[in-house]
Structure formats: structure tokens, C-alpha cells
Image 1 (cartoon, helix red, strand yellow):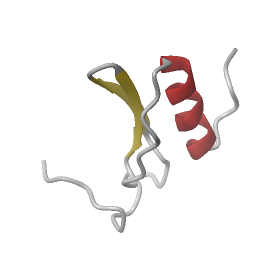
Image 2: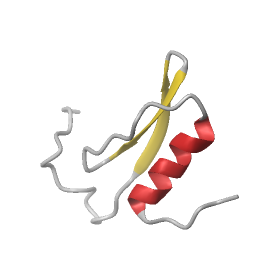
Image 3: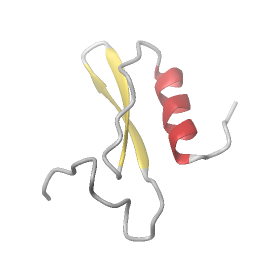
Image 4: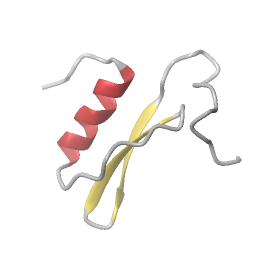
Length: 60
């Protein structure tokens, strides 16, 4: 699979598919459209960034 660039379209169904991952002590949110959120020390903040980007309602 090739790397995505910010100009690539979202997934085939047009939705933004977000995921969170870790790099060292930081959590990151990324999207299938190429968007990447800021590095966060708190995983829940990274998940909130992903939800805000995709338009999903927040989960508490």
C-alpha cells in the first residue's frame, strides 16, 4: 500500500476513516484523507481530535 498524501480523496465510500496510534510517549490521530492531528500525551485527546475531524459525535 502506498502512502497517502493530503490531496488523496477519502476512502472509497467517501467517509473519513480515522485511527489513533502511538509514537513514543505521544498519541496521534490520522485519517484516510491524509489529515493528521497534533501529538497528544493523552490518548483520549487524540481520540477526540479524530472524532472532531470525522464529524462523529463524541463518546464519553
